[in-house]
Image 1 (spheres, rainbow, N blue to C red):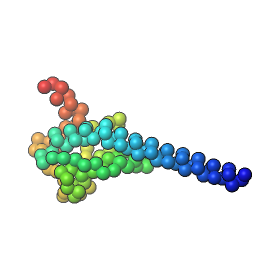
Image 2: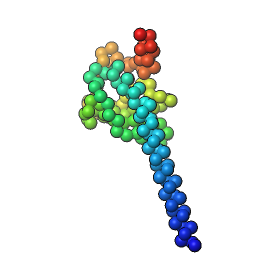
Image 3: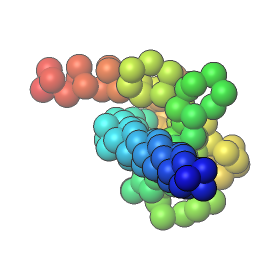
Image 4: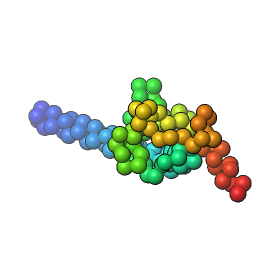
Length: 125
């Protein structure tokens, strides 16, 4: 009888752990689905030689802020890290290697447009 209880407890722990893991993976995938187009819009608008984006991972740092990592133009050397500080991504791409990054458009070399500003501009047209 005691062995049966231990086996049931182990099975329950495995099920709970597996469910938690699946929920975390689902949340990460959902974050990429919702924020990916915003990141892509930001890169298209603010950088000259942007062609495509590939997302690698989602990491939540110790303060609870999710970061989406990936690379652009099918070049794994052009790695980036984007933090989602508010409800949605709005601006700011951290290039892993500053020497290997996209070139900002001349008009946005010192201050890029945020996704909110880009969307307002698109709605006016």
